[in-house]
Length: 215
Image (cartoon, rainbow, N blue to C red; front, side):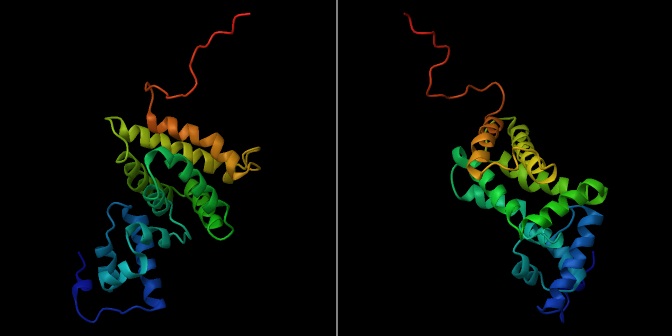
């Protein structure tokens, strides 16, 4: 490993330093994949203090989002949604967060551009896939009980991906024209079902199998 980052005389913070870090991170992510890249290895190659990367980007997730020029990082947004409430209301929080970020004229276009590029570029597509699996699927899997937690987390993520694809890539109607409340009302139940998993009873306040009232 390159140990130049452990030597004295490393770069201090500046716009050029930040750009150099991002250049190294972008190349390393694309060449080595999400898991193999560490903040320490990026700091060493960019010849900066590790603390400087933490100062600029906060975490590996933050560095990843910045390296791909994303104004909002989906993994960080999920972490925020998880921290804001309990599991029972997570579907609604996630849907509203997706709508807020992807509809935003500043944060939305870079995300859409990244997704379109990932479809055509195998290296970027593999990188995005690995980041989603490690930072989103595994995070959700840690929230739900059961041996099939990862399958349920993947199903949850797939529903969210379907919403993003339908509304922002394919621009399907009427999903594009729906209000936020309409989207939440139609999509959240599917996310809740994904978290619950197949074969588990659905709680309802309305009795099932009611017969018609007698005349």
